[in-house]
Image (tube, rainbow, N blue to C red; front, side):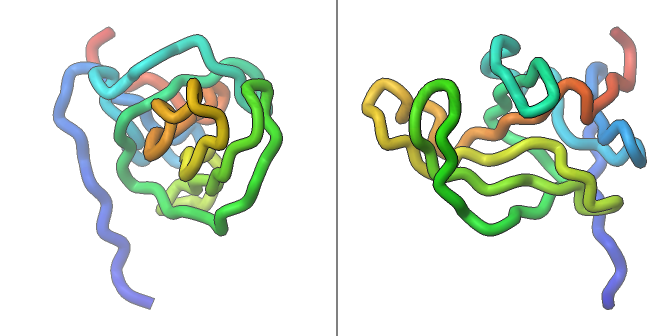
Amino acid sequence: MGRLFKQYLSGPRIYSCSNCRTHSADHDEIISKSFQGRHGRAFLFSNVVNVTLGPKEDRLLITGLHTVADIYCSCCQAVLGWKYEQAFEENQKYKEGKFIVEKAKMMKEGTW
């Protein structure tokens, strides 16, 4: 196995994995804070870093059927949320390619 490459974010408000503190997302990448994850509130991000994707699967969520892939912290392998790969309903298409990160799985770093 090779050496793990981690991307470090330089903004003033960064979200990190709550398990190992690896940077996950910049606050400026938040699209919405009003989403629901498996373990409570979740944020919709346009981009995240230091994650790996699990296999795609169809999942029936509150807003309908979606094809999603779980996202894992690339350092500690904790499940952080999921990536929307495909939305089957037209009014949900804006989520495609975006990421849900559960609030319980991340912590704030930087100057808040």
